[in-house]
Length: 293
Image (cartoon, rainbow, N blue to C red; front, side, top):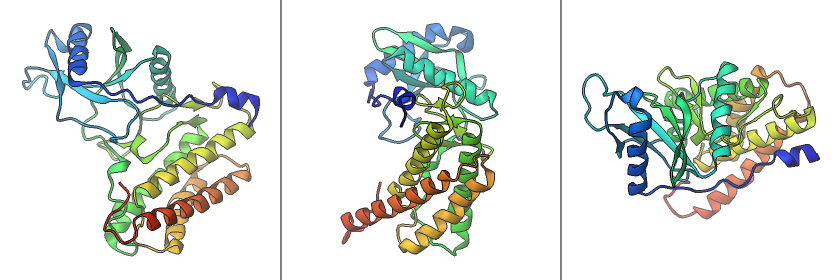
């Protein structure tokens, strides 16, 4: 990679879970700061709500009015805590740029980022009803050829392939594009979130070589997350390759504006690496009834 790319390389993500007591501090502070939205209601932590994966680098939780009535029962806010203000601001800015380019993201509330002494900064977004992540699909549960496989696995994978191509064609590199960071909204359309590591081709002045390198890395991360979720766990390597090519790579190529031929090399390499990872997982789980979690 060039010196320019090295400058843009991301620092390691920090795990930053909050205790229940710290979450309550956030809720009390935001009760005051979000008064215009809550009309004086006291906010409390909603322990029932959850989003994303258990291995998220940041604790994500929800707060809502303590007394819920018909008028505010849908008034729920998502909270994500950051130690560094610049990280929170980068994610907020990334969401806004993505929105400007026609993509659906979480919707910031007010100024978006709120200081919470001494805990850092919290990015506050509106709760999106029925938002799920692609991590939650039963990727290993259905067999190729079954109607349920086509409907519940192949079709969403095709949508992910097309969406990834559209995102890259718009000059957006998500930065951590795993299944757990691809949302699906109430309408079924993809939703972008967890964009603190996002890079934009024009904003960050990436040249063609650097941009294609990031695209290749992003595709590899996406494919790896499919392996980790046990995609076609019970099928042969041949079927795995054919389905991954036909339902992810082909829709990507059909929807991308990227013409650099090296992209095909990156795609092929990501499949080859996925097959190796898959074989290692099968060896690790041999003789058990377990699957990758």
